[in-house]
Structure formats: C-alpha cells, structure tokens
Length: 95
Length: 475
Image (cartoon, rainbow over all chains, first blue to last red):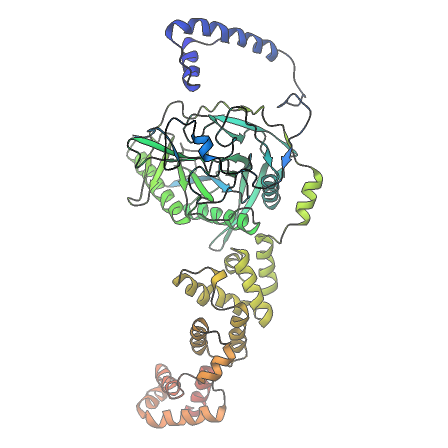
C-alpha cells in the first residue's frame, strides 16, 4: 500500500505540521519508504507471538500515593506568553 | 411502527487518590487555578510520568467487584488530539489492553432484575479545564484537574430503556462509592456519564445509528437526555430522515439534545503504546490481598437481606444503595428482630423525611437506635400506626427516645378491654342512628362508630380491638 498526497495532507493536519504543496511530494516519498519497511515486517509470520508493547522486559514502577509536588505556579507561568488571574491564556478555542 | 431503544453507557469514575495518576501534585478540588500542577501535568519537555499505586489498587478493586477479568498485564497508550487544556497533545489512556475486561453488573428496575455486561474499564488521566468567559476574547486554562486519575467504565449496549440506563448508572455509582474508590461527588464531576443511544424497529437484529450524549452529571439529566434523544431519533426516522452518527450535548433548560459541530478528523486519535510507560503488571499477590480486603458487596448484601429478613428484591435494592443506609437498616432490624417492619420504616417514612429536608442518611437526626425503639413499640402493639407517625415526628424534632416520647405525650395505645368497652358503649348510646343503619346491614356505619371511639380515646385506642368490641356489642 502507498500513501496518496491527500493522506499525507491529512496526517500533517492531524499532527499540526505545516507541509506546503511543494513539500508534499518529498514527504510522500519519505513516508512511502517507511511504509515499504512496514510491508516487509508485515510479511513475517507472527502467528502465536505475543504482541510487544515495549522492547524491555521490565514492568512499570509504581509510586506511593503521596502529594510531593509543591506549588510552583509563579515559576511555571514566568515562561508563559500570557497569564491572568492564575490562568494561562490562549487564543479563544470556541466561537 | 414499534421501536426498540438500545443504550450503552461510558462512565468516567474519578478515583479518590490524594495525588495525580502520573505526578505528585494534589487532586484536591477547588484550589486556586494552576496551584496543583507538577512538571508532568503542564507537560514540560523531558518530564516523565510515574504511575500512582493507589489508582491501580482501586481499578483492581472495581474489577473484582464486577466479577471481571483483571488483566495481569495492561498497556498505556497515547490518545492524540490537540486542545489547549491537554498540554502534552495526547491523553495517556489504555487502548488495546485495559486493566479490566468482561465484567457484569446486576440492576433492578421495578420488580425485574437484569445483568448488564461491562465491556472494559481502563485507567486514564483527566484533562484540564478551559474557561471561555471573561478573558477579553481569550480562553483561560486551569491545569489543576489535568492528570487526575480516571477509570472509564464502558458497558455493552445492553440497556433497552432510559430507566434501565439510570438503574445501571446508579448501581455503578453505588458500587464505586461502596468500595471507596470514588468520592461520588457528581457536582464536582467525580462521576460523569456519556450515553450512546440508538433506536431500531422492533425485531431488527442490527443496531441503528447511534448518537453519543456527552457529560451528564446527574441521574435526572441522564434520564431526561435519553428520553429527549429517543424522541428526536424516532421522529426523525418516522419523518423519513436519517440519524447520523454524532456527539450531542443535552440542554436541560430546553429539554433537548443538540449536535456539537463535528470535525471530520475529530475521532482519529492515532493511538499507540506510550513509550514513557512500561507494561503495568498486576501480581497475584496484589489481587489476593485486595480480595481479602473486600467488603460484602451490595449485590451480596441484597441477596442476604432478602433471605434473612424476607424483604422484596425492590426493598432490598433500595436498602443497599449505599453502605450507610444498609448499615442503618441492619442496625434497626437486628435491634428489633423486625426486618420487614424496619425496612418499611426506613424506605417509607424515614426516606420521605430525609428527602423532604434534603438530608443524607449520614446526617439523619434519628439514630438507628432511636428508630429501633419506635419499631419495637409498633411490633409489641404499644403504638398503632397512627400514633407511631406521631412519635416519629417527635423523634425527628427531639433527642428523646421513643419510650420517653410515648411517656411524655401519653401516646400509649389503649388495649385495655374494660376501657375500650366503656368508650364503645358510650359511642353506641350517643349515635342511635348509626347503630340502626349498621343493624340494617350498612357496613359503613360501623366505621362511623369506630371513628367516634377513636376520637374519644384521642387516637389511642387499639383500632383492631375497637372494631372487634363494636361488632360484639352490636351483634
């Protein structure tokens, strides 16, 4: 299978990456090469093999349920472009 | 045409942990904006999530209570979408391998019992909050809620009426608060319901197209929203229209559901396993220790109430709607040995009074011990049901025991045959017309006479005895 230019434009939109009309050609070629690799892997017989979610054979470390984080709002908001009344301000997201 | 309704629910249960699912920030409700955020919650580059053990324990607890499969290994995945209250650009959730699968929950609607299948329950983090007003054209973002642990419980489309959907939501609510894994505060969003609703002609096997009603935070709204949605879908189809899959919001003021503007890409979340989190392993030892620590569950307790106290399934399900009410009932039943009578008073007069005053059983002004005192006096015939209500009113208003109130107000039922005979004779002498009518075959006239006796005794004569003696004297 291979990706059309429309597929590439859609993936770019979902990922919020701007890909210009001129770039689509090159990006499509790159992505399709990756698809070629995936095709090869798909050809391997994996019947009876447990899907692997993580390459290391270790399990998740758990922490105790304790509040350990102090309030660092001022420090965090010092690098935010716009704040008011303790809130981060962003361009309006609903009309 | 007859239509059949099909409903499935997705419930977001907020797990009652002290800290967030992947960070050490507090989950307490109502703090000043953004004062409960750690580097993970605001998605500073390089910050890594570390899983909260308590969230895992609570999920396992629900899994066992739903008689579900608790997966010994489950996987966290990234659900990708862009919204400013989700600073990472993805929500950490579980997709292919959730922690809990294949459960079941029994519900009671009227006299009927039904088992609803639970497809899965998965762990995930909540998003922050967007405030759209008052910021001169901007949106304000509060990330205190970001990273709060949620367990999303997904049912099979097994419900066939709004009543069944509400019964399921209530049963799940009872269970999560019973287990102590959720504080149950619906106003604060601790228990949020999405309802998937579709209709199909009766007899058709394939499902109709469904619409999803989002974010219902009361049982009343859940019922109203589903009713409105069903009506809209049936009218649309009967008018020759088509239902299109959509996400809708319920407007309680107008009593209608309205489609949210749909973006074509909105549901393309491009899930993939989160490389920041290793597989979550639940050990046999953990499962065994949680099993050993499980309380008697509402379903088990309901069955026991039916068996031990001879209650109806309906009464027993009301009395096991919460741990506090169950404990209250059982204290009254045990103290008096009168299960049925105790159930009638707890589900009847007491429930009505609590409801009237907007009180929870925990804030009930009558302790189980004091109600037991009343029930005992009804059982031994000291009080008629009318006098019992009078004593109940006094119990509600005072700290006294039932016996003290009976003593103080002279409310003891008069069962002394001599005293009642005297009043009956007086009533007969004073009402020759009623006597004549009764003797002529008019049954109702006896009630008039009995009423006179009750009045003369100021309601205290034993009504059964009054009737009996009246009949004997008039025979």
